[in-house]
Amino acid sequence: MPAVASRGRGRRAVSEINMVPFIDVMLVLLIIFMVTAPLITPSLIDLPSVGKANKQPDTVIQILINKDESLEMKIKNSSTPLDGKDVANSVRNAQGGNPATPVVISADRTVKYESVVKVMDTLQKAGIQRVGLSVKLNN
Image (cartoon, rainbow, N blue to C red; front, side, top):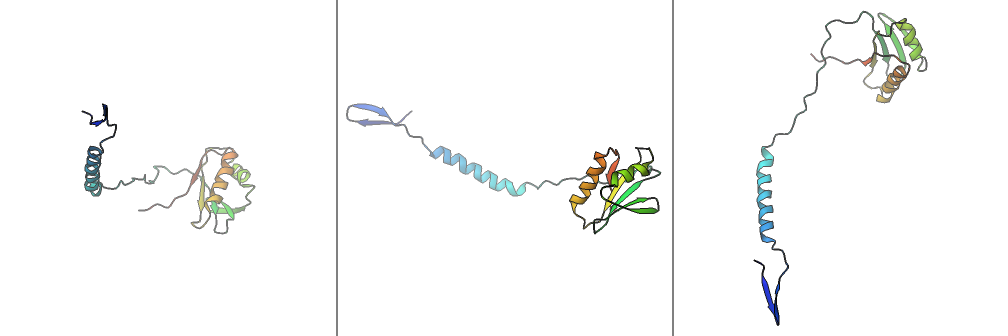
């Protein structure tokens, strides 16, 4: 029932909001959050692991990016230096008309990420389908 104020002639309702119940509810919620916050365990992200494939491909073309960002193409045990502009043509020639031959990019740990992405982008723009990155397996 609203509070009524009487002034002189007639009665008038007071249009003020009573803040006490609102403050009580907010304090109870604050206490609940303060008690339960330490009990919540932080979420852990379960990253996928890299496993070994059942069968390795017969030939793999490996593009090596050295510390000085020079490029080499390695097929089996032979390696040839590459120019950044001729990467796609050299890889196509090494595939020998077989576009299913995988290409793996291996870069030194200190090489800028941008250099790796440029090589990968060049290969994908040239239509080379199977391009991947080399990783170090943790055993």
